[in-house]
Image 1 (cartoon, rainbow, N blue to C red):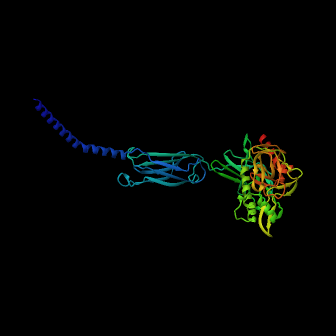
Image 2 (tube, rainbow, N blue to C red; image 1 turned 90 degrees about the horizontal axis):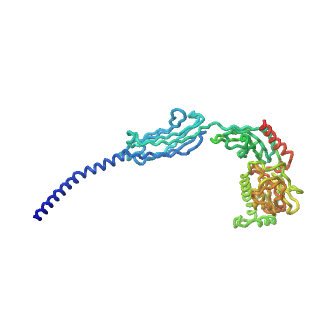
Length: 473
């Protein structure tokens, strides 16, 4: 009986395998078709949104700006783009483009697109206030009823095409070539930068006091060279939207003649000067005169550039009081603006302008701070040797060169008359003396004006008192 049962079971098992094989054979195409259908639906109904990048992203729109937009869609490809600018009401179209559907599943369609466009607020008659750039992009996905995936990029700006206002409050500006001036002016509250434009150089202004931020003062320098008819002064202001205002103000410039001085370079002086500077400054095969000219030209320029840079950190508040002190019991050896002509071997080899006053007394005489301030530089400075630079606030600085000893440190506050060092002959100096310089925002001016109590009263203090009266009213 047992063998018969086994044979029956084996037969049933064979029949079952045959049925399963037939099922698999007949259902396999259906599964494949189902997979293909799912892939097809996932492809044409893909949900990845297009990407968009806009540059630049300004906070203000004051003048025509060219923008660049980059679009990408790596799946079904780009369908269309619309760029518009909106204020109140409907948007103004700036850029519109449709892309063609090419090939199976848009395989040959556009996947990446880059386009520049410009927006001119005046040409589009945009009003002052907020304006939004709106970018709308669709792809060729069948989502959203066939409209495709949608990406909206929006950038908010402020339309501001009205320049800031600036007007002079001080009236009298009598100036000397190579001298300094002070103008007091009022600005509108949207002003970001302001000052006096002397030809193409800007001298920045500073607020007079915190409660009256709209009132500014600005010290500026008048060029010492050229013709006064070629000197142009303007009040200048720029707001946060980069709008610029430039207006004239009343001034009178007095012509000034500067002394001319001939300097004859002997072999002895040549060797003395060159040997006092490090040898690594010069080209290895340079001659003594070439080394001298490098010191007098390139090194001088580098040192003057360093001085201007150090003057950038001037305090906004006034640190000084009253006229500046002149070195005691000192003879004047050279004046500001002296035109120096250098002769070597009977020929003119160089020219320079002396941008300070040379004062000489006994060797190693004490040097006093000409006014109260803060030391911002105290070390060797090339042609000027051991040097000290004092910031007096609001862009005013004094410079002391050729010292034999420095008695102060950077960051130290000094009072008027405090000893800051001793005279010497370091740097490009042939004898013991002090090179005294006065700088306005890093530009050298004639120190004589600042030693003169009457000049300070007429050109600075009286103007400030008049503004105080305006503020009190």
